[in-house]
Length: 475
Image 1 (cartoon, helix red, strand yellow):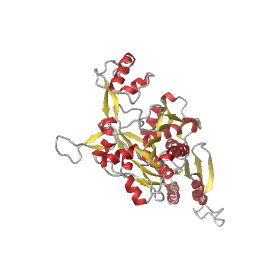
Image 2: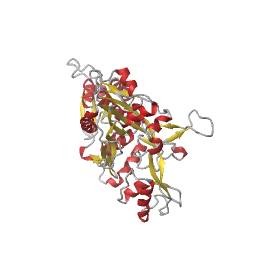
Image 3: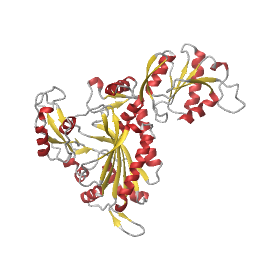
Image 4: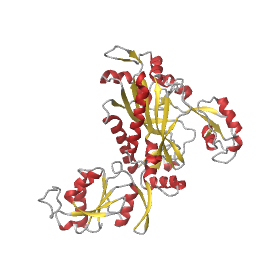
């Protein structure tokens, strides 16, 4: 990681733009706060992180199935869940420049804790008592309005072409509600037995007051959520198992264990039995990356009351009927993305020059292999390099072909995007025919290439017939 954490975020943001990981949304129109676009490298890393989560949460588990619910849902869902009334943040506005701030975060920055369960009156008193210590982040003045609750649901006029919007639709504020309302569908169609889970990756939207810290707090983002349904008496045992499972899954991404920790929620919502966050040590300090929560039976009970439909589980052996309890794992793709980049960012010196490289685990690197001809202006090298590229591309994806600039600059570009291996085709390569058989009949007569390791910069000579097996063993 960079030696000075104070400027690490600036370096990460610069690298993301420069190397095609993340762009500001609508940049040519001046941008759009709280929204970012993932570029060619970013979308590959993003997809790899989602595939890793899906593998751990669905494919490795016989007790968890997947779902992809709609972004738009019946507005009554958000009333039953409590989002239309209780899904809010405390907001104050600067009277001088009209910049909006989150009062609880402003208080937190000066060491004053604002409980999320506080009423408007309580947080206003706390804000007033500390107003002399709080400055507007934009103009520096200290002239604020009263704090008021600001609902985070994003309204839409979907299907309503009048000006009244008497019954607004909403862009979903979280993905888990789609899981709860499909509980009975999944239970009946898949013949699931308790305990079982339903997992989903999808977009969510929040009308954030002050999006900040790059990808950490956004207005449009993707969630990875799994809701696990249990017998009431078993929920806390399953909760501890899920905590342990998610910790191991995050470490399997290559994130350093010293950079993550558990943090217990001290102020629980009324229906929760327990809640912990996995925090990552971001450049500004430890902050939430993923949550694991024991939610009791609140969610199914609310939707049963709101819809008039029974959302119960009937034991086939005992005929017991009850509302299952829920434990959940919930994390944001963009927060995990940012944590992985921060954890992988490294600076060193190689061949007398400063080098920036992403020490990503090969399995999640956006590009697995880069193939180079030593010289762009030698047709025989380019032809052979493309031949070897085609061989590798049939077995390993994604890989790229690069002949732009000198070989040193090409290595540096690949280091910055985290490509674990670079394969260079040189004049020695073209002296012998290419074989992919990898058996004794081809040894000694096969073309060879140079394979460079990203982390060490070391190069070794290898026959093309051994290349695919070697790289596959590493990723």
